[in-house]
Length: 297
Ligand SMILES: Nc1nc2c(ncn2[C@@H]2O[C@H](COP(=O)(O)OP(=O)(O)OP(=O)(O)O)[C@@H](O)[C@H]2O)c(=O)[nH]1
Ligand SMILES: [Mg+2]
Image (cartoon, rainbow, N blue to C red; front, side, top):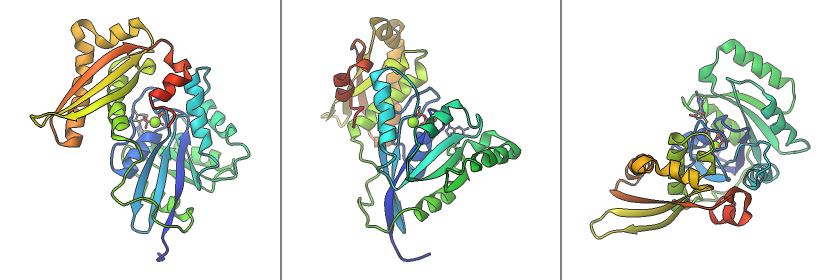
Protein backbone atom coordinates (compact mmCIF):
# COMPACT_ATOMS: atom_id res chain seq x y z
CA UNK A 1 0.00 0.00 0.00
CA UNK A 2 1.41 3.38 -1.00
CA UNK A 3 0.36 6.89 -0.05
CA UNK A 4 -0.44 7.89 -3.62
CA UNK A 5 -4.04 8.79 -4.37
CA UNK A 6 -5.56 7.41 -7.55
CA UNK A 7 -8.61 8.51 -9.47
CA UNK A 8 -10.24 7.83 -12.78
CA UNK A 9 -13.14 6.50 -14.69
CA UNK A 10 -14.30 2.94 -15.32
CA UNK A 11 -17.32 2.06 -17.43
CA UNK A 12 -19.38 -1.08 -16.92
CA UNK A 13 -20.42 -2.50 -20.28
CA UNK A 14 -21.96 -5.69 -21.62
CA UNK A 15 -25.13 -7.14 -23.07
CA UNK A 16 -28.45 -6.55 -21.36
CA UNK A 17 -29.27 -8.30 -18.06
CA UNK A 18 -25.76 -9.37 -17.06
CA UNK A 19 -26.04 -7.28 -13.87
CA UNK A 20 -24.22 -4.03 -14.70
CA UNK A 21 -26.61 -1.81 -12.75
CA UNK A 22 -26.70 -4.25 -9.84
CA UNK A 23 -22.91 -3.98 -9.67
CA UNK A 24 -23.01 -0.17 -9.72
CA UNK A 25 -25.55 -0.06 -6.88
CA UNK A 26 -23.70 -2.64 -4.79
CA UNK A 27 -20.34 -0.93 -5.22
CA UNK A 28 -21.84 2.43 -4.27
CA UNK A 29 -23.85 0.81 -1.45
CA UNK A 30 -26.78 2.90 -2.64
CA UNK A 31 -29.46 2.44 -5.24
CA UNK A 32 -28.74 4.74 -8.13
CA UNK A 33 -29.74 2.63 -11.13
CA UNK A 34 -32.99 0.78 -11.78
CA UNK A 35 -32.73 -3.02 -11.82
CA UNK A 36 -35.02 -5.53 -13.48
CA UNK A 37 -35.07 -8.97 -14.97
CA UNK A 38 -36.42 -7.47 -18.20
CA UNK A 39 -34.23 -6.55 -21.15
CA UNK A 40 -32.86 -3.03 -21.75
CA UNK A 41 -33.62 -1.65 -18.33
CA UNK A 42 -30.91 1.04 -18.31
CA UNK A 43 -31.43 3.68 -21.00
CA UNK A 44 -28.59 6.14 -20.46
CA UNK A 45 -25.20 6.45 -18.81
CA UNK A 46 -25.47 6.60 -15.03
CA UNK A 47 -22.44 7.86 -13.18
CA UNK A 48 -21.59 7.05 -9.58
CA UNK A 49 -18.65 8.08 -7.41
CA UNK A 50 -17.01 5.41 -5.30
CA UNK A 51 -14.92 6.95 -2.53
CA UNK A 52 -12.14 4.76 -1.15
CA UNK A 53 -9.42 5.73 1.35
CA UNK A 54 -6.75 5.76 -1.37
CA UNK A 55 -8.80 6.34 -4.51
CA UNK A 56 -11.87 7.73 -6.18
CA UNK A 57 -13.47 5.58 -8.86
CA UNK A 58 -15.90 7.25 -11.23
CA UNK A 59 -18.14 4.40 -12.32
CA UNK A 60 -20.30 4.66 -15.42
CA UNK A 61 -23.15 2.18 -15.78
CA UNK A 62 -24.24 1.88 -19.40
CA UNK A 63 -27.21 0.51 -21.35
CA UNK A 64 -26.87 -3.08 -22.55
CA UNK A 65 -25.30 -3.29 -26.01
CA UNK A 66 -27.73 -4.88 -28.45
CA UNK A 67 -29.10 -4.73 -31.99
CA UNK A 68 -32.32 -2.80 -32.64
CA UNK A 69 -33.82 -0.49 -35.23
CA UNK A 70 -35.53 1.91 -32.80
CA UNK A 71 -34.03 5.39 -32.39
CA UNK A 72 -34.03 5.07 -28.58
CA UNK A 73 -32.17 1.76 -28.67
CA UNK A 74 -29.62 3.00 -31.20
CA UNK A 75 -28.98 6.02 -28.94
CA UNK A 76 -28.63 3.76 -25.91
CA UNK A 77 -26.01 1.63 -27.64
CA UNK A 78 -24.20 4.74 -28.84
CA UNK A 79 -24.08 5.98 -25.25
CA UNK A 80 -22.41 2.73 -24.16
CA UNK A 81 -19.93 2.71 -27.01
CA UNK A 82 -19.08 6.38 -26.42
CA UNK A 83 -17.55 5.43 -23.07
CA UNK A 84 -14.92 3.10 -24.61
CA UNK A 85 -12.40 5.78 -25.43
CA UNK A 86 -13.51 8.18 -22.67
CA UNK A 87 -12.56 6.07 -19.68
CA UNK A 88 -9.39 4.76 -18.04
CA UNK A 89 -10.71 1.24 -17.82
CA UNK A 90 -13.56 -0.80 -19.27
CA UNK A 91 -15.24 -3.43 -17.11
CA UNK A 92 -16.71 -5.90 -19.60
CA UNK A 93 -19.38 -7.97 -17.91
CA UNK A 94 -20.55 -11.50 -18.70
CA UNK A 95 -23.05 -13.64 -16.90
CA UNK A 96 -21.71 -16.99 -15.70
CA UNK A 97 -25.08 -18.72 -15.99
CA UNK A 98 -25.39 -18.19 -19.74
CA UNK A 99 -21.68 -18.36 -20.53
CA UNK A 100 -20.28 -16.50 -23.52
CA UNK A 101 -23.20 -16.14 -25.97
CA UNK A 102 -23.80 -14.49 -29.35
CA UNK A 103 -24.88 -11.24 -27.71
CA UNK A 104 -21.59 -11.13 -25.78
CA UNK A 105 -19.76 -11.73 -29.04
CA UNK A 106 -21.62 -8.71 -30.46
CA UNK A 107 -20.37 -6.65 -27.49
CA UNK A 108 -16.76 -7.71 -28.08
CA UNK A 109 -17.09 -6.97 -31.79
CA UNK A 110 -18.22 -3.44 -30.96
CA UNK A 111 -14.91 -3.02 -29.10
CA UNK A 112 -12.61 -3.95 -31.93
CA UNK A 113 -9.67 -1.59 -32.13
CA UNK A 114 -10.43 -0.02 -28.74
CA UNK A 115 -7.13 0.53 -26.96
CA UNK A 116 -8.53 1.18 -23.45
CA UNK A 117 -7.58 -1.55 -20.98
CA UNK A 118 -10.31 -4.07 -20.20
CA UNK A 119 -11.11 -6.21 -17.20
CA UNK A 120 -13.54 -9.08 -17.72
CA UNK A 121 -16.03 -9.34 -14.87
CA UNK A 122 -17.86 -12.66 -14.79
CA UNK A 123 -21.02 -12.04 -12.75
CA UNK A 124 -23.70 -14.29 -11.22
CA UNK A 125 -21.24 -16.94 -10.06
CA UNK A 126 -23.77 -17.79 -7.35
CA UNK A 127 -25.74 -19.55 -10.11
CA UNK A 128 -23.07 -21.94 -11.40
CA UNK A 129 -20.84 -24.83 -10.35
CA UNK A 130 -17.16 -24.15 -9.94
CA UNK A 131 -16.21 -26.40 -12.87
CA UNK A 132 -18.31 -24.55 -15.41
CA UNK A 133 -16.99 -21.22 -14.09
CA UNK A 134 -13.40 -22.40 -14.52
CA UNK A 135 -14.18 -23.58 -18.06
CA UNK A 136 -15.69 -20.17 -18.90
CA UNK A 137 -12.67 -18.35 -17.43
CA UNK A 138 -10.40 -20.54 -19.51
CA UNK A 139 -12.43 -19.93 -22.69
CA UNK A 140 -12.29 -16.17 -22.12
CA UNK A 141 -8.62 -16.19 -21.20
CA UNK A 142 -7.80 -17.72 -24.59
CA UNK A 143 -9.21 -14.61 -26.31
CA UNK A 144 -6.29 -12.57 -24.92
CA UNK A 145 -8.42 -9.42 -24.77
CA UNK A 146 -8.42 -8.72 -21.05
CA UNK A 147 -5.83 -7.56 -18.54
CA UNK A 148 -7.63 -9.53 -15.84
CA UNK A 149 -10.58 -11.87 -15.42
CA UNK A 150 -12.48 -11.71 -12.16
CA UNK A 151 -15.48 -13.79 -11.04
CA UNK A 152 -18.06 -12.06 -8.84
CA UNK A 153 -21.62 -12.15 -7.66
CA UNK A 154 -22.91 -8.58 -7.57
CA UNK A 155 -26.15 -9.72 -5.97
CA UNK A 156 -24.41 -11.65 -3.16
CA UNK A 157 -21.65 -9.02 -2.93
CA UNK A 158 -19.06 -11.73 -3.48
CA UNK A 159 -15.70 -10.63 -4.90
CA UNK A 160 -16.47 -6.90 -4.78
CA UNK A 161 -13.50 -5.98 -2.57
CA UNK A 162 -11.12 -7.76 -4.95
CA UNK A 163 -12.78 -6.01 -7.89
CA UNK A 164 -12.36 -2.59 -6.25
CA UNK A 165 -8.64 -3.22 -5.63
CA UNK A 166 -8.20 -4.44 -9.19
CA UNK A 167 -9.85 -1.33 -10.64
CA UNK A 168 -7.66 0.96 -8.49
CA UNK A 169 -4.53 -0.81 -9.82
CA UNK A 170 -5.41 0.36 -13.32
CA UNK A 171 -6.25 3.97 -12.47
CA UNK A 172 -3.73 6.78 -12.81
CA UNK A 173 -2.55 8.91 -9.91
CA UNK A 174 -4.94 11.81 -9.59
CA UNK A 175 -6.91 14.16 -7.36
CA UNK A 176 -10.27 13.73 -5.69
CA UNK A 177 -12.52 15.06 -8.44
CA UNK A 178 -15.78 14.95 -6.49
CA UNK A 179 -16.65 15.67 -2.85
CA UNK A 180 -16.91 12.60 -0.63
CA UNK A 181 -20.59 13.09 0.11
CA UNK A 182 -21.53 13.00 -3.57
CA UNK A 183 -22.63 9.59 -4.88
CA UNK A 184 -23.97 10.35 -8.35
CA UNK A 185 -24.35 13.08 -10.93
CA UNK A 186 -28.00 12.15 -11.56
CA UNK A 187 -30.66 14.64 -10.48
CA UNK A 188 -33.18 13.66 -7.80
CA UNK A 189 -35.96 13.97 -10.37
CA UNK A 190 -34.25 11.46 -12.66
CA UNK A 191 -33.53 9.01 -9.81
CA UNK A 192 -37.11 9.15 -8.54
CA UNK A 193 -38.44 8.70 -12.09
CA UNK A 194 -36.28 5.59 -12.44
CA UNK A 195 -37.69 4.18 -9.19
CA UNK A 196 -41.19 4.59 -10.62
CA UNK A 197 -40.15 3.05 -13.95
CA UNK A 198 -38.58 0.12 -12.12
CA UNK A 199 -41.93 -0.68 -10.51
CA UNK A 200 -43.57 -0.55 -13.95
CA UNK A 201 -40.91 -2.97 -15.24
CA UNK A 202 -41.79 -5.23 -12.33
CA UNK A 203 -45.56 -5.16 -12.69
CA UNK A 204 -46.32 -4.62 -16.40
CA UNK A 205 -45.68 -7.25 -19.05
CA UNK A 206 -44.77 -7.83 -22.68
CA UNK A 207 -44.10 -4.59 -24.63
CA UNK A 208 -45.76 -2.26 -22.08
CA UNK A 209 -42.75 -1.73 -19.75
CA UNK A 210 -40.49 -0.99 -22.71
CA UNK A 211 -42.90 1.62 -24.07
CA UNK A 212 -42.84 3.61 -20.83
CA UNK A 213 -40.96 6.76 -19.91
CA UNK A 214 -41.38 8.52 -16.57
CA UNK A 215 -40.87 12.24 -16.05
CA UNK A 216 -40.99 13.80 -12.58
CA UNK A 217 -42.73 17.12 -13.18
CA UNK A 218 -42.78 18.63 -9.73
CA UNK A 219 -41.70 18.07 -6.13
CA UNK A 220 -43.18 20.28 -3.41
CA UNK A 221 -43.16 20.02 0.35
CA UNK A 222 -46.71 20.65 1.53
CA UNK A 223 -47.76 22.52 4.66
CA UNK A 224 -48.42 19.24 6.49
CA UNK A 225 -44.78 18.16 5.87
CA UNK A 226 -45.74 15.62 3.20
CA UNK A 227 -43.61 15.71 0.05
CA UNK A 228 -45.81 15.77 -3.04
CA UNK A 229 -44.28 14.30 -6.18
CA UNK A 230 -46.09 14.67 -9.51
CA UNK A 231 -44.88 12.41 -12.30
CA UNK A 232 -46.08 11.65 -15.82
CA UNK A 233 -45.90 8.13 -17.18
CA UNK A 234 -45.70 8.22 -20.98
CA UNK A 235 -46.73 5.27 -23.14
CA UNK A 236 -46.83 4.92 -26.90
CA UNK A 237 -50.39 3.69 -27.40
CA UNK A 238 -53.85 4.15 -25.89
CA UNK A 239 -54.04 0.36 -25.37
CA UNK A 240 -50.83 0.52 -23.27
CA UNK A 241 -52.22 3.43 -21.28
CA UNK A 242 -55.31 1.35 -20.48
CA UNK A 243 -53.18 -1.58 -19.31
CA UNK A 244 -51.06 0.70 -17.11
CA UNK A 245 -54.09 2.21 -15.46
CA UNK A 246 -55.69 -1.21 -15.07
CA UNK A 247 -59.22 -2.12 -14.09
CA UNK A 248 -60.59 0.60 -11.84
CA UNK A 249 -57.09 2.09 -11.67
CA UNK A 250 -55.73 -0.99 -9.88
CA UNK A 251 -52.46 -1.32 -11.83
CA UNK A 252 -51.52 2.34 -11.45
CA UNK A 253 -52.39 2.15 -7.77
CA UNK A 254 -50.00 -0.81 -7.28
CA UNK A 255 -47.21 0.92 -9.22
CA UNK A 256 -47.72 4.07 -7.15
CA UNK A 257 -47.78 2.17 -3.87
CA UNK A 258 -44.52 0.29 -4.53
CA UNK A 259 -42.78 3.44 -5.74
CA UNK A 260 -44.07 5.51 -2.82
CA UNK A 261 -42.92 2.92 -0.28
CA UNK A 262 -39.40 2.90 -1.71
CA UNK A 263 -39.27 6.70 -1.93
CA UNK A 264 -40.52 7.10 1.65
CA UNK A 265 -37.87 4.71 2.93
CA UNK A 266 -35.18 6.46 0.95
CA UNK A 267 -36.12 9.99 1.96
CA UNK A 268 -37.41 9.13 5.46
CA UNK A 269 -40.46 11.27 4.88
CA UNK A 270 -44.14 10.86 4.03
CA UNK A 271 -44.83 11.13 0.32
CA UNK A 272 -47.90 11.80 -1.77
CA UNK A 273 -47.14 10.41 -5.22
CA UNK A 274 -49.43 11.52 -8.03
CA UNK A 275 -49.03 9.64 -11.31
CA UNK A 276 -50.56 10.78 -14.61
CA UNK A 277 -50.55 8.50 -17.66
CA UNK A 278 -50.28 10.08 -21.10
CA UNK A 279 -49.82 8.81 -24.64
CA UNK A 280 -46.94 10.09 -26.76
CA UNK A 281 -47.22 8.09 -29.96
CA UNK A 282 -44.00 6.32 -31.04
CA UNK A 283 -41.84 8.42 -28.72
CA UNK A 284 -39.06 5.82 -28.89
CA UNK A 285 -38.50 6.83 -32.51
CA UNK A 286 -38.50 10.57 -31.83
CA UNK A 287 -35.22 12.14 -30.86
CA UNK A 288 -36.92 15.19 -29.37
CA UNK A 289 -39.07 13.13 -27.01
CA UNK A 290 -36.11 10.95 -26.04
CA UNK A 291 -34.19 14.09 -25.11
CA UNK A 292 -37.15 15.60 -23.30
CA UNK A 293 -37.53 12.44 -21.21
CA UNK A 294 -33.90 12.71 -20.12
CA UNK A 295 -32.41 9.69 -21.85
CA UNK A 296 -29.65 11.56 -23.62
CA UNK A 297 -27.93 12.90 -20.53
N1 LIG B 1 -28.31 -14.58 -9.30
C1 LIG B 1 -27.82 -13.38 -9.59
N2 LIG B 1 -28.60 -12.47 -10.20
C2 LIG B 1 -28.07 -11.26 -10.46
C3 LIG B 1 -26.74 -10.91 -10.11
N3 LIG B 1 -26.52 -9.63 -10.52
C4 LIG B 1 -27.67 -9.21 -11.10
N4 LIG B 1 -28.61 -10.17 -11.06
C5 LIG B 1 -29.99 -10.10 -11.59
O1 LIG B 1 -29.94 -9.96 -12.99
C6 LIG B 1 -31.05 -9.17 -13.47
C7 LIG B 1 -30.53 -8.03 -14.33
O2 LIG B 1 -29.81 -7.13 -13.50
P1 LIG B 1 -29.47 -5.63 -13.97
O3 LIG B 1 -28.48 -5.12 -12.99
O4 LIG B 1 -30.72 -4.86 -14.18
O5 LIG B 1 -28.77 -5.93 -15.37
P2 LIG B 1 -28.14 -4.89 -16.42
O6 LIG B 1 -26.92 -5.52 -16.99
O7 LIG B 1 -27.97 -3.56 -15.81
O8 LIG B 1 -29.29 -4.86 -17.55
P3 LIG B 1 -29.60 -3.68 -18.64
O9 LIG B 1 -29.74 -2.40 -17.92
O10 LIG B 1 -30.88 -4.15 -19.25
O11 LIG B 1 -28.48 -3.70 -19.63
C8 LIG B 1 -31.79 -8.72 -12.21
O12 LIG B 1 -32.90 -9.57 -12.03
C9 LIG B 1 -30.75 -8.87 -11.10
O13 LIG B 1 -31.32 -9.12 -9.83
C10 LIG B 1 -25.94 -11.89 -9.45
O14 LIG B 1 -24.79 -11.70 -9.08
N5 LIG B 1 -26.54 -13.10 -9.22
MG1 LIG C 1 -28.83 -1.75 -16.24
